[in-house]
Length: 88
Image 1 (cartoon, one colour):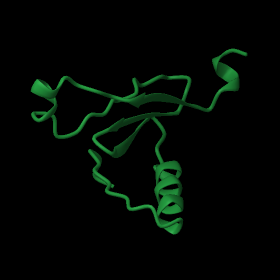
Image 2 (cartoon, one colour):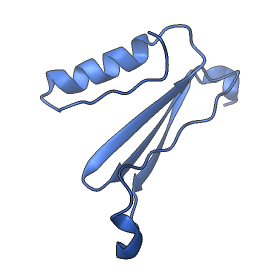
Image 3 (tube, helix red, strand yellow):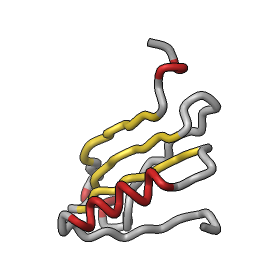
Image 4 (cartoon, helix red, strand yellow):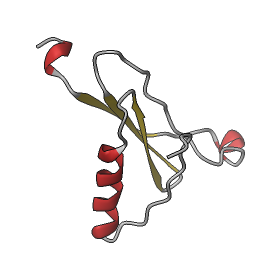
């Protein structure tokens, strides 16, 4: 297909497991998608300790995609906690 036909991407890394000796030291686990000049938004999904972490990476000026995604989860009764590194 080529990157000019793609507007975004998602990588589902699935559940992460650590040895018991290390697991108690891990509070959360997530993966940050790398930026791309040709794909405006990317997301990664990983689960750890009963929690699913969705991380968006984007070069788009708007965060509307992310807002719509998490709003939809909340409308379906799924609790959402958002942390962000932008001023928006």
